[in-house]
Structure formats: C-alpha cells, structure tokens
Image (tube, rainbow, N blue to C red):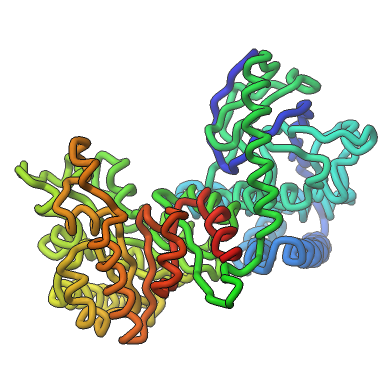
Length: 559
C-alpha cells in the first residue's frame, strides 16, 4: 500500500480503480503570417464560437446545479470578451505577425502570470480560469472537437457525455480520476455516473474546479504533487476527501475500514436524498431556518453538502488563531468573499473577532488574567483596539458585495457596546465610500446573546439590531456560574437547567416583541431532546454543525 497526503477540496470517500488522464499538451506552433487582419478575424470568430460554447455549458450547469453555480461560466465568457484580453491577442498578431493560436497562448500566459502574482488567493485561482478559456479558443482555432483525444488527454470539453476514451464509457465501469490538473469546464462536464472521485497533482482548495467538485458531490483531493504517477492507472485506490489521504493498492484492513465509513456516509446520503430541498417545517406548518456553523472557508463545502440553508455562525477568530501575525484586510476579505460567493444567495452570518478566554493568540500580547472567562475578550478587545476591529469590518463590508453577509457581535452586555460597534462600522462604511469600493449599504447587524446581562437588556438591544443569536455554551457558563473549561464542574454545568431555558425563552420573546428574529448557534441547537422545547418557544433559526443538519431537519419535519 502506498499512502499519499494531498489537500482535501471535497469531502467523501471513493473506492475504485484508477484511471489516469494524460496531461494536456498545450504546445502550439509559432508561425509567421502575411495577413494580420485575416488572422485577427480568425481569432474573433474562434472567440465568438468559444463564447457560444460557454453559454451552452452555463445553461447545462444552471439546469443541474442552480444559477449561482453557473455564474462561473458567465465569468469565463466575460474573460473572453474583455477588451484588454482581445487587445493583447490582437496586439501580438499585429506586432509580431504571429498566428492566432500562438497569440492566444502567449496572452493566456501573460494574464495567468499577472493573476498568479496577486496577493489574493481568489485572484490567484483566476490564473487557471484564463488558461481554461484560452485553451477553448485554441481548440476552436485548431479545429479540435469537444471530446477526448485518442491518446486519452483532455482536449476542450473533453468530458462532455462522460469520458468516452480510456475505456471508461466502453466497459461501463466507474473510476477514480487521477490527473495533473483539471480545468473548470472539464470538471463541470464529468459524467458522475462514470466518475467516483478526483485526485490532481495541481490545484487549490478555492479554485473553481474545487468548488464544482463540491457542488457535484464528488470526493476530491488536490496538491499531491510529485506523488502523481501515471503508472497508478488500473490500480485500486481509496480516497478520503475529508482528510486528503489517498491509498493506492490499499491493504485489507484499510479497505475494510473505508468500506464501513462509506456505508455510514451512504446512509447519511440516503437521508439527504430524502430531505434535500425540503423545507425545515413541522407538520403544523411552523417554519424554522436551519443553518450550519463553520470555522474556516473550506467548511462551506460541508454546509452545501448537508443541505443547510445558510451559515448561522462563521467563527472568524480562526483566521487569527491559525496565523503567527495579524491577518490583513486583504487576507480576511479573500476568506469572507470566498465563502459568500460559494454560498450564493444563502445567508452567511460572520461573528466578529472572539479572541480571549480559552482562545489565546500570542501576537495580541494579552496580559495574564486570573479569570479570563470574565476578562478581556471578544467585543471588549474590538472596542478598545478599534484599529484591529476596523480592519475586520472593512473586510466584511467589502465581502458583502459578493454575497448575503451579515455581521454578528459577540459577548454583548450593554446597549452602549452595540452603539460603539455600530459607530466604528459607520466609519468603515464612510472610508469605503470615499474609496469608491462597493459594499452592501443595508448589511444586517446582530448580536450574540451569551450573558445574563444581554438577556435582561434584550428589549433595548432588539431596538438596535436586526437579529439575535443565542450562544448557549457561554450563556450556560455565565448563567450557572460554571467555568466550562473546568471538567470538575461538569455535573453542575447542566445546559438543560430551567434557568438556562428560561433565559432562552426571555430572549425569544423580547426579539419577537420588537419584530426581529432569534436563533440559536450553540451546541444546544443540535440537542434533539430539546428540539420540541425550542419549537414550543418559537425559535426562528437553529445553526448547528453541518453533519447535524439532516437529523435535526428530520426531527422537525416529523414534529
């Protein structure tokens, strides 16, 4: 058995025979031409054909996966129609008197290098997109069909109607595809009946190819690098899309374990098929919004895979915890924007920085505290160090132009804290307006209800914000005066305590009195023994771990 570690881009388990796709040879002949105008006309005609192909591909993807996933190919069409791109190609033809194919390839390399040099990983991923659309134009110019070449390499829309060469369609088997890389248009046209999973040597977790793999429900791993070996063709492999592990020629123990895991996953998938797209609604018609909690941008894939209606809690502090220095505005914008784009129109509620207590970061240089749970943390850091807070707020506002983002403030204990936070937010908005940077002017603001003080002040707080989200972990800790990090207090820290449940009830009632919605984003939200209680109290939203979404929806729909 050979074990390879790659980067997880789409969760799931695949067990099957490997089919290696040969690398695409993008070499084109450089020819000197006598009539630059005729060559420009060839380029324009090929570009128009490629745009039409992308329109058809876009319509196919929209029909199968939804409009928001088809937007990628709208972006690809815009790339081809970009005046700067056309000017670059035609300039090379006119100045160097070269053939259109060579000019397109040279232009693609220039634009790809420009994207790759940018700081934003989202923009870096566009390097693959410009190569993809340029390859399509080159294929039209060279008269290549949209099918798999005889040598098994991917050419143009190679996987339209399934991968028809390399024995995949002929023998009716399904395979795990190993490749140097796959373009977004190739991935979008994979026949899922013939493909079990994807493993590539190159690529990134936030590329459009990775996003499409997640949308299609294909386990996918990228970044195996030099471990990619064409000799693996025909061998049995197991891929774990969650951990990023690849096992070639797995031993019996590995096969047995992954078959067990796959069976469990398929049972979960059966529940998904039964409930996918169904409203989270009781038999009496009571509607509850069912969202998921995440800690990293890559977690959005699990939100979509488990059919949650949105993200109810994005713990932004992990962008700080996993770094050795301050995350820049650009870094944060990239992370928030990536999630917003991937989630489309679905809500993405992002909690502002919640550092302190059990979440310590060295470069914050926080002083030692005897009781950090009651100390300098969360909104208190943000309000006393506004230079840190404003960087995050600017990033959140900028990302709001790309999706349905809302901002949630943690650890609130007073109305003044909310007003102070909103003042800094308005300063950030004013700066962005002055810089002519787009953002959602009506972005929603909410607060986490985590302290007895916020429950007591809920009526006044509700007048200041658009929603409440109850953080039951801290609310239990502060209501019962039990440090949740102290294992010896476990018997006293009962989240089912009537005191905690009454706090939840008071919060919901206050929210509804003032016409705002109220949700729960703490662990109690997934406690099926309390679902009946929350429904009776009139909860509007529950946000839980992605894997808890379907079991919870099942309980609610049977209530």
